[in-house]
Length: 152
Image (tube, rainbow, N blue to C red; front, side):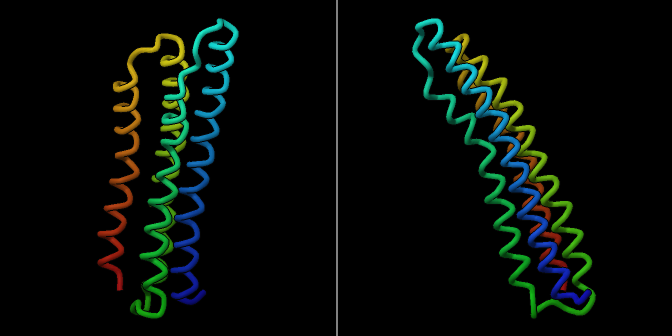
């Protein structure tokens, strides 16, 4: 496989893994939000619109994967010989780290949906916890950008 093909494969893997994590994460959180809203409606209690912030939180990881993808694709045709494999590996592992961050952010978001709907308290704390999980994806993206800058 040529270096250019490996770079493109790494870019696609990065976006795909990040996007898959976002899909899982938003799916988990959305399921919990729907269940929490159902409980509110059943109890004739106002359903909190704020739950959508927990549902949408894992979407940003797809953007991080996309940023890395564009940086990697920019290397096609410009990279030195032998840079394909490091880019492929960087794309896979950065995408995996970003995707797992999204998945677990969605799991935490699901718990936040349940807690917020039940108590109507703690929104800031729940959002802060989701932000900490998000930080893993940001670190993975930044460190991958640094590593990609050293390749070719």
